Image (cartoon, rainbow, N blue to C red; front, side):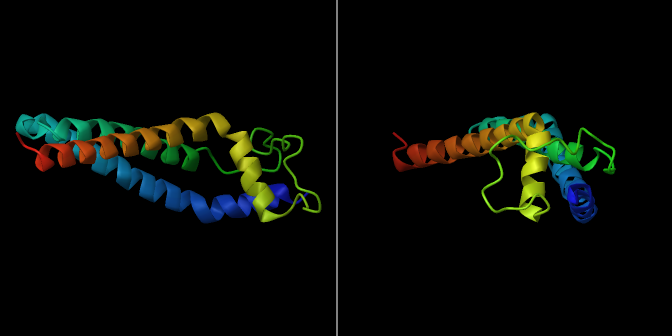
Amino acid sequence: RRMPTLFAQFYAAAHTDLLVWGSLSCCCSILLLVTYYILPDVRRTPGWQFLYSSLYDLYASAGFVAIALLGSPSASDAAIHLPLPPGLLPAGVAEDDPDVVEHAICAAYLPLFVSFLAADMGANCWRLLMYVDLIVVYHNPF
């Protein structure tokens, strides 16, 4: 099977980007939280809503850093190279197709992906709530 080789290529290409951008995003979220702590006046509406979204962003960024720090894959690492769930491969698709590697990675790390993608969705929902609140307040201030 070529899947470990393809996964190793994917890991080599992506883990540095995930680590750098995830770490920068964590730092930005932490700086924003420190700013909210130092300047309590900015926590007024809509600041408190943005505070919650930045907490969710911090968790999502930490998830990307966790994926980057899982370690270099090896051919003997059974946790990384889990077999694909039945029925995942469409007819006529080989197991060494790069898209199959992406599906295998998602299947192997499903709980981690679901948790930090849910956090990302939560952050976007808090930002949406903030914008809706601002539109309602400024549309009719009385």
